Image (cartoon, rainbow, N blue to C red; front, top):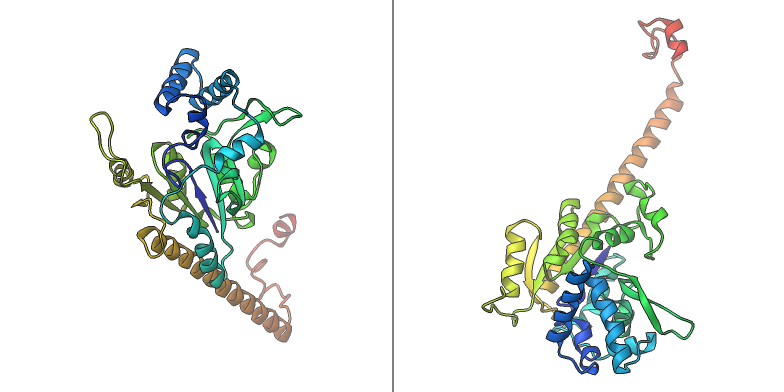
Length: 317
C-alpha cells in the first residue's frame, strides 16, 4: 500500500520557500508571492513556472546560491506539524506487523530538492515534485518540471503502475490490467490540505482509496480568507474527500487512528484475497480428480457441445 502526501500545508506549515530561501532574498513572503502571481498574469503563465522562474531571477540578483546543494540546505530549515517525524517509523512498524508493505510518496508543487533536504526526506520511496534543470556544476538554469493541481493525478497513476520517474510517458499510457499493477488504487491514501489537491482526492475516492483533507487549526478565518478548517469541511461536504482532520500526526490522534484503520483494511483485504485464491485452487484440484476418475464423455449424446446441434456447423465454429 502507499500513502501519498502533498507537502506545503500538509506536512509543514506554509510554503517551503518561505522558511529560509525567500528571507535570503531580502523579501517578505507576501512580496514574493504577489510578484509571482503578477508575473503569471502578465505572461499568461502557469503559476508554478512563474514562481520557479522568479526564484532564479531574484536569486541571481541577490547573489543567493541556486544549486542542488543550496536547495537541500534550505530544506533543512523546514519545520513540521506536530508528530510528523515520528509518524513514518510508527506507521511503518504498524504495517509491518500486519504483513503490509507500506510506501510513502510526495506529490507536491514545491521543490523536490528542498523536500529531499528536509529531516524526513529519506522517508519517501519517491518524491514527485517540481524541479529545475541543472548545468554541469549543479547550478539551476531553468524549470524542468512543474507539478500543478491538474497534473498531480498522473503521479497517482505512476505509483499505481510502479513507474518511479516523471519523464516516461510511454509506460504511463501503456495498458496494464488492474491485477498486474504495482499498488491498487484501493490501497492508496492521499493526504492534502486544500483545493489544489481536489483532483487527487476525488480520483482516489472514486477508485476506492482513502482521501483525507487536513487543515491547520491555527490558520483561522480573516476578512479576506476562509479558515483552513472551513476549506477542508467544504471538501468533505462536496464529497471530494472522505475525511477532514487537523494536521496533528501524533500517536493515537484522529489522523493516526484513521491511517491505522486503513492499514487494517488493506491487511484484511489481502487475507480475503488469499483465502479466495486458495479456495479456487482447491476447486480446480477437485475438478481435475473428478475428470480423471470418470474419464471424458466423447459421445454425441452426452456432449453438450454437439448434442442436438448440426455437427457440420459445430466443426466450422
